[in-house]
Image (cartoon, rainbow, N blue to C red):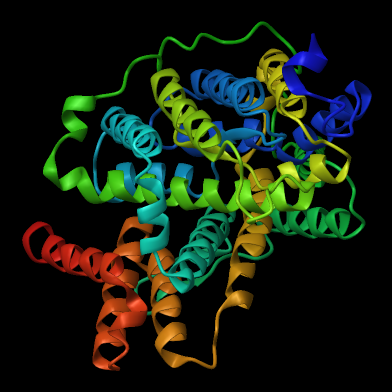
Length: 430
């Protein structure tokens, strides 16, 4: 049955190899079951319900990716977009988390339609490569400032806007310890380094009475507080268009980049360097986003950590199915997830920020017309506390600089059109 479903022999793999690959991938991304509930709970959502939604949305995405697309790529609620959901859409802009969930659902529907009608190629081609790097790095910087703020390392300062907090406080010291531990374990290529770092810091916090252990295992909590609570009508407000676009934009390019990158490493691209069944993979991603919004979590997306499973030999969708099964098993560890303190996840956020900021290395810094928009995109996200504003300012600056430099043909019609639309948006909608 497994052979007929996943074509194991054709891909030169075995059931045992795929299971090991699935476990490896799960260990590298399991930190999300601790981090996502803690971030979304700040928006007012029930932490236990979000924990269940995180695990179930991830499982649904993995199962669809495995059975329909047959790729060894796992999905779960994405880092960066969960922070944008909580701190920008709900915290800064003042929308309710129900409306924010509605925006996530609508972005998933739009993603699905783009995949079905094959408009995705035009959109992907319309976004200049430098801006893609700028967005990835900007999300990393956005996560970094959230991590530093959560740990108390960066605090408000009326004179300078921000300042240094009390670096001798237990939360700061434990955050620093977690970050260093995760980086060191990653250097030695220890599977599950992020999750290990989170659990070790939590254990130390409990021993120092800086955290309380609520338990380890129990029956899953109720998902009722967030299930089908999305406010789609509220999300249809014209002021939400840029937010929906931000959710869609980041998910689309994060997914496309992950699919191509992981598939290239696994040797799954065809002779033209294209990914067969790309449409099915994108449908899996968009469907998982819609399912996650219905359950009660932010955007679900493909995880670059899937490369760890590919390195362990994963070549088919059976790897993704194993990951999905492990996410369902994780449902019974909700007391442990609720015991994770903020400072334990702050170090993990900072580590993920480092990885995402690495996109800046691919920028053509010698070309000022490319470098300037990238920097504006990246730095605008943490300083405006908004991924959406960073994307908009990036497009506007890219289009304006290319036109002013007489190199408008390099920008392309799609990027210039989007730049004009963002200008109109700022003028009339703020």
